[in-house]
Amino acid sequence: MAHNYQPGEIQDVADFVGDSLELSQQAALSQSDVILFCGVHFMAETANILSPQKTILLPEPNAGCPMADMVTAEDLRSKKQALQGIPVVCYVNSSAAVKAESDICCTSANAVKVVQSLPQQEILFVPDQYLGQWVASQIGKKLHLWPGFCPVHAGILTQHILEMKRDYPQAKVITHPECRLEVSQLADAVPSTSGMLRYAKQTDTKQIIVGTESGIIHRLQKEAPDKEFIPIKPQARCPDMKVTTLDKILRCLEDMQPQVIVPEDIRVRAYAAVERMLQVV
View 1: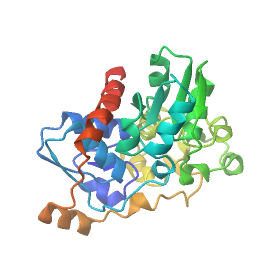
View 2 (view 1 turned 60 degrees about the horizontal axis):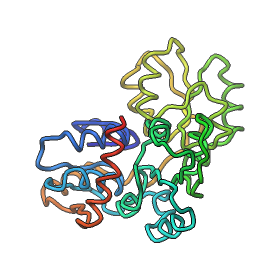
View 3 (view 1 turned 180 degrees about the vertical axis):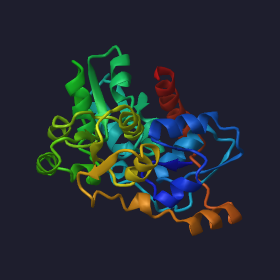
C-alpha cells in the first residue's frame, strides 16, 4: 500500500495507492496477512489499529510526520481537562496515542462530514489548525484549533497562487485543505489528494495548478494524461514521504521487519475513534 505522496517508482509497484481515508479503509478490508505500508509511521499504526492480527511492515521506521509530532497524548489530555465535555475530532495525521484520547478521527476527505455528524456545537480539533480553519469555514460550529500544521502545505502562500494565476490565466487551481485558509479561498476546489484525482479526470480544463505535496503529480499525470499539471510550488516536498525506496521495500519483505505494533491498551481506544469515522463515511 502506498500513499499518493510516495515517489513515483513506489506508487508503480504498489497494489493499492490512495489517500489517508482510502488507505484506512483498504487496511480494514484487506484479506492479506501482511501489509507493507509505503508511507509514514502514523499510517502504518492506523493499519495495525484496524488489523491487529496482521503483520504491518514499514520499510523506513523513521518516516514520521512533523504535524503528528506537534501534539502528544499528555498535552491533549490537559487540553481536554481545560475544555470539559467538548468532543475531540482527531485528524488521522497523528499518533495512535493521540487517537486513543480522541472521540472520533477524520481525514482531509471527510473532515467536514465528521464534524457535522457530531451533535455538539463546540469541537476540539487536533492537530491541524489549517484543516480545522477550512472545516470551520464550511459549517456553523465553533472549533477550538490545536496550533499544529504541515510544514509543506503551510509553505504554500497566496503569492504563489497569484503568480501562477498570472502565468496560467486559463488554468484551474486545486489546493489541499491542509493549506492556509487564505490560500484555499483562492482555489477553484479544495479536495483531498484522491479528490484531486477525481477533479482532474472530470474537469474540461486542460491546465490544473496543484497546491499540495509534489508526489501527487506522478499519479495525476498517469490517470489524466491529457491534462497539464503545474505545481504551485515545485519544492513542496515532504522528506518523510520520500525516504521509502525500492531497496528498502525488498529488504523489508525479505526480513519481515521492521514491524509496527501499537500497544493493545492504546490500540483498543484508538480503534474506537477510527471505527466511528469509518461508520460516518
